[in-house]
View 1: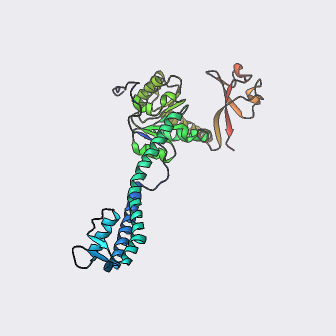
View 2 (view 1 turned 60 degrees about the horizontal axis):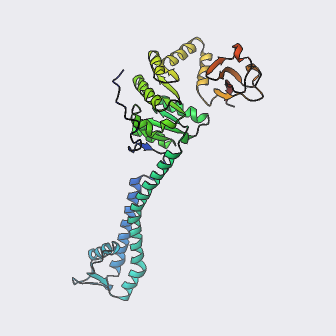
View 3 (view 1 turned 180 degrees about the horizontal axis):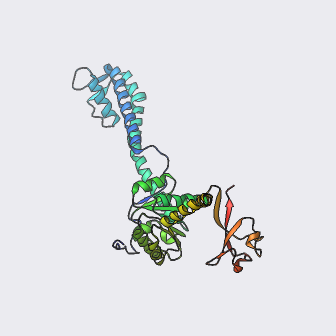
Length: 348
């Protein structure tokens, strides 16, 4: 086990770090947007320069001499930027009409491009802050998935397949690129070390209903479970470990269910070796949304009082209170309305 990290005080400000990444919205990259607007502003400047240069005989240069192309570019620059030194001025009627109907509208367009870019950046920041504040005030009874690797992504896919909404899932991972990937998938993400209290507070873990712990290391999973259980006593905590010997420690740390990935894979391999068909069925049951699925649902009024064998779906266990009863046990002979049943059903 690695050395335990010092946990931040529960009263510390949870939103001080800008590590929350909201679901991405489809927009052009910021660099592309700024670049396109700069090109448009340059096009307006070039067009104004050409207009002035074509009508150069209608302008007066206080420095004397005719108006060169450089003078036209200089006049266009100071005019569009509203600087207006007055050293070059239109004096003919044509030049003044051109300033009224052509150059003035171009000046307005130029200012809109430059000022509009700044305002849009400020508006986008305000919009993001509003979305973040709204998310903070509404997130309740959600699921926090810690670790967005192979196990975490599979857990999210299963949750989505069972009807959990994307806005009800928050992903926590120390790598920003991983969180940005989750955001592109429509999930809220938090960048940070999940063994620290402030990171879990940013994920609103105290108000979560479920916590999935799926980091890369078993010692990290233990630390996360301790911190998560300290913040939320009532949430259902499901954790994944690589080695069987670490499962009891994780249960003592507060995990309700511990799944051992290496031994589970080994058992599936052994079963597939002895019976490839049985292994294929187990793989089908573990893959949600295809073929057969294992689901938990409440007992209906029509099923209450009857045997589990009388249910339309294939019942394999009965959940009564905090106990899980095998369907063959005498206590499960008659279903109660408050029971829940674990069934195998076809996705079709």
